[in-house]
Amino acid sequence: MPDLIVAGNWKMNTTVAEAAVLAAGVRDGAAAVSGVELVLCPPFISLAAVSEAVKGSAVKVGAQNMHFQESGAYTGEVSPGMLQGLCDYVILGHSERRQMFAETDESVNSKIKAAQAAGLKPILCVGETLQEREAGKASDVISGQIRAGLEGNGNTTGLVVAYEPIWAIGTGQSATPETAVEIMGGAILETLRSLHGAAADGISLLYGGSMNAGNAGEYAAQACIHGGLVGGAALQADSFLQVAAAVAAAKA
Ligand code: 13P
Image (tube, rainbow, N blue to C red; front, side):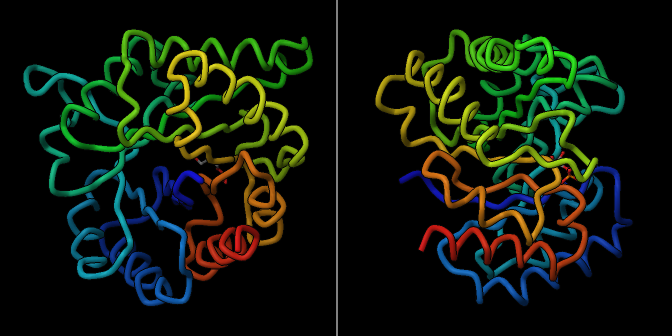
């Protein structure tokens, strides 16, 4: 079975001081959750403080984005080399970056290769809009995003894929486990297998979109779901740890 992972995407929340407190809270409760890798993804400016706070524990750190170039005239951007030593994971292609910051499949593709070259584990995010779902295009959209994001890249090292239906993010309207399985065990796994053969079955697949302590277990009870990418419920140590505990219990 692929690694079980529960990652918290803090988005544009927490000051550096608040991030350190939240990270310490997760660190202090992490020992009670076994068998699940916990990943905290704070804003860039808090990566150092969070990585310091979790030092010596099993809790891992991730960035929320990254540029694919190593250096240069890219005002406001952060390179793979700058993240080395500060985090192990990097979220790439989140729908908020695709929708609000003109992230394209092509740039996501370059970023995944650059992350792997820097020894970072990319969390590739894919997801359809409500309009696409209602038009019956969800599976096609998702396979297209996976293919384009991974085209010309035979390397699955560290790769994690997160399915985050856009209509489920921050809305409280989580996808039913059946809907998640239809996409994750269907379009996502099939596309990964067609690209990577048997290696596809070693890739951790995370669900994201209004995941919380109450519904996490229902997702993790599905064979093709190996954890979650959590937004709102990751902003408090207790609720984040409860999500992780529910995932651990469902897989035990
Ligand atoms: P919510 O859990 O707040 O719906 O956010 C999900 C998400 O976008 C995680 O990346």
